[in-house]
Structure formats: C-alpha cells, structure tokens
Length: 89
Length: 415
Image 1 (tube, rainbow over the protein chains, first blue to last red):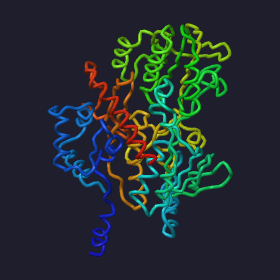
Image 2: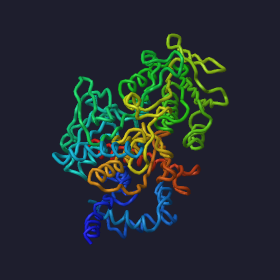
Image 3: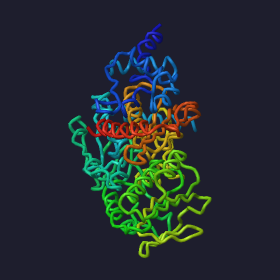
Image 4: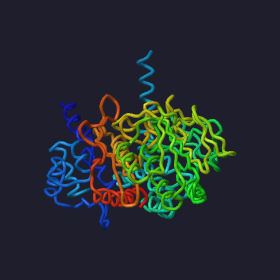
C-alpha cells in the first residue's frame, strides 16, 4: 500500500515536459513578421495551423518546402504541433 | 565484481545530483555558435532555476550562412556579426575565454588561464577543426594565401578581397572535401556566387571546382543552374580526377592525383573533424566526430556531456546552422528533463538549408529525422529538394525565404 502511494506520487516526475515532437524546430524559420518573408505561426489559431499543415502535406496548399516537411508528420502530430504554436509556452 | 563496479559507478554518477541539492543545477555550454548560443538561451527560458554558463573565446561571432554572399561582394560583413549581449541579459554567465580540456570524471572544464568551471551537465558545441595536414603543403600559414574561408571572419574578407584582385582572364580554383563536412551544399553555393561575381566583373575569368566526391547536395539543381547561368564554371568530380592532394601556396599551384592547376586564386576547403576540445577530451571517436544518443544528445563516450551541432554524429542530419539550432532546442529540453529527474521524450527534428545560386535565385533541401536503431534517421517519404522545374517566381521566393530564415534563426540564437 505504501509502495503504491509512492509510485503514484513519483509517476508525474517521469513524464517528459516541453513541446510535442517536432514543434521546437519550427522557430528556426517562423519568427517575427519579415516583409515578404516566412509567415509567423506563434499565436495563430490551432484550426488555421492544422489546416495549413495538412494542406501542405496533401498538396492542396501551395508550398515552397513545407510540403516536403509535413510528409514527416501524422495527423495526430500535426494537431499537437498546432495546439502548441497556438499558445506557445 | 562487475556488478559491484557498476554499483560504484552509479553512485559516483549520482554524486553531482546530491551536491546539487545545495544550490542550483549548473549547466555549462561550450562554444557560442548557432548550437551553443541557442542551447544556452533556450535552457534559461525553459529552466530558469538552472545556472547556465557559456564559455566562448570570441566576443564576436561571425555567421557562416550567407558569408558566401559577402565573398561575392553582395553583402556587408556587418550583417554576419553577432555578440553575446542578449545571452547575458537572459541571465547566461558568459566567460570570454578558450577552454583547453574537459575533465568528464570530475565534471569540470579547464580554461586557458588555468581556472576551472564545474558542471552538472555540459553541452558541447565546438564546431569544426580544419584538417590542414590532409592536403600536403596546406597549413594555417598557407591559408593566408589560399584562403579556406570555411570559418567565417577574417578568412571571409580575405577571400573576398583576393577574388576582387583576380585579373580578368584569370583562373580561380576551389577545392571541395569528401563527406562529412560543415554545410554540405555550401561549397556549391560558393562556386555559384564566385561564378556570378566573375561573370559580372571579370567576364573572361573562369572558376574550376575540384571535388573529392562525385555526388553532392542539391546536385541536379546546382548543375542545372550552372548550365544556364555560369558557362565560366567547370566542375571536376572525383572520378574525373577532382580530389586535391597537394597545394603550393608560393606558386599558386593546386595538384590532384592526375593534374596540376595554376591558380590566380585558390580557395581550399580542407577535410574537417570535431573542434579540438572534443578530441583532447575523448568525446570524439576514431572518425574525428562525436557519437551521441539520438534522444538526449548525450555523448556515447563521456556521461554528462551532450554534443550538438557540426561536431556531433547526427546520423542523417547534415552539419548545418539550422540543424545545430534544432538540436540545441531538443538538447536543452533533454538536459532540463534529466536535471529534474524526468526521462526525455523521443524527439523529431527538422532541417532546412537554403542555397543562393544567384541574386533572386534560391533553392532548398529539407529533411525530417527521428531516432531509429540508435541514430537520427531520415523519415522516408519526407524531405527532399526544391523541384527542378520550378518557375523563376519560386526561385525568387526561396531567395527571400532564405533571408527571412537568417534573420529569424540569428534572432533566436543571439537576440
């Protein structure tokens, strides 16, 4: 009983923190507004970001290289990345 | 006996964690390039309770991306210069000194003045060391006549000025190493922009690129552009006898196994390995590069040391500024997790590299990576290069995006 309680308390410590897989790479390109440059993503609505990333992946949205990058992510991963960048911590 | 030793080792490794209970965890970042600067700042953001120290000998950092445009007279060197004021403002303690050695057992860095800096975890981002001796006759001194310009700074300006002094009708020779080396498409961007400079200012001069390999990054894109834009550029691959084995700076001679070239200007990019401190501290293996765990970037050779950027063996990831910055953010998170007793999650990393072939003509290569079988591995079906048949508007857009990328990534790394 005592062991079980310790395990329950210890469990949250073992869960990794931080952005979902892939999300921290985005800010290498997507920062503040640059005229004629790469659009910012921080604070954009999650639905908009999800639609853009899925559109890049399936080719329905015009891209320079986001089409190539998004092929490396699943629907669930795209949703998680969109949720993170909609409200980055 | 073996179990006992392991037990002792585990106890020894746990000691810093016990000592840490008396003060903040100490992370030392060694090397203030794209990897180190990004890691130090990110760690301060996500783990403000951690004491972060950056050890970097230079007060000013000269960025390599876009330095080829400086060489070709298209960009001011001031646009490549960054300092560490923003890191200090973020609470990073900056030590402007060279480090001579890492004592991984005692977990301390020895500085050039003999001082020491203790750490609980070290993030090592030492960049590259040039292997001058791999080309007979080449040296640090010879590089004063035949610049490498593969570390940005005075060498960049030397190559720019020497290029401007090449006579019309003269010959420029470039030597490109075999893999792996810093910035796989970089030599070909440089060749493009030198050819652009010659075409514009010295129309009777030519560029010969001697290459120690037959295949290279974005090859079809570069070669298609060269065919249409730069008849003054001749590329000689390995199988055509392109591997440079010897130079003579005095006479301006560049020799391959098969031929000898007389150059008015020679740009020799020598083979490379991890920065010297990685070798003297036994963090690099026999290849000259540093093997790492692909989840935490912790060294496979020295516990407590994490290696990022050009020095790391990052599997499919190229040695690029973008990769160093992406690795820095994942590594900073992993270090914060480990210091807090959490297990780092499996990362996904991205790389994007733009190359400028001519003003308003940009091309890119991209990749997505995840740990597989102990190394960072390309995700199949993702990544790749710009299309071969893209219209001029797309090339112009990628050139603009390259500029945009540089502003964003340098702001993230250096403020």
